[in-house]
Length: 194
Image 1 (cartoon, rainbow, N blue to C red):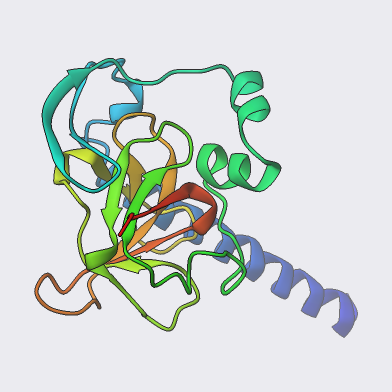
Image 2 (cartoon, rainbow, N blue to C red):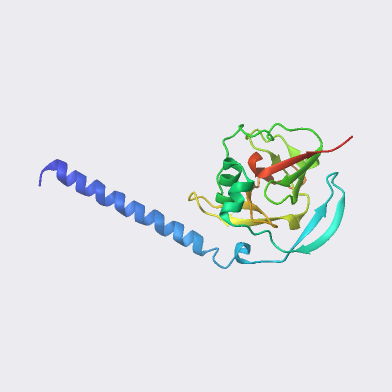
C-alpha cells in the first residue's frame, strides 16, 4: 500500500470514528432529557394570563391550544415568520425591526396574539435580537431543552400555540439574571397609547 492510500485510510477511519462519537454524545445528551414532558404532544387546554393591549392583566384562563395545519400557518405568516416560529429558524442578528425598538408597549406572539413580554423588561443586550429579562407572565411561555446544534440551550416557546420564539440564557441583567433572546419575526409589537 502506498503512503497516500494508507494516510487516506487512516484519516477516513478517524473521521468516521469522530462522527460516530459526536452522534453518540448527542444521543446521550438528548436521552438525558427524555423524561421531560413535551407539551407539543399535549393537546391542551393550557393556562395563560390574558393581557389587554395596554398591559393590564385580565386574569388567568384555561384555553385550548391553537392548532393549525401547515398550509394555514403558511397562509397567515410571512415566509420568515413561518420559518422562525414553525420550523425554529433564527433571523440574522440586527435584521429584525424590533431589536432597536425602545417605545413603551406590549410584545405579543405573531402566530396567536398571546401576550409574551412588556417593554419594561426589554434591554439592549448588544446581540442584535430583542432581549428581555423576564416574560410578562411565566404561564405564557414555556421552556424546552434544545440540543439541536450540539450545544445544550433552552428554547423558549409560546405556551398557547407552540411557536418557537428564541432562547433564554443566564447572562442577563438583574433582577433575574436572564436574557430572553427573541426573534423579531416571532413578535408583534403593540405600542402603548399615551
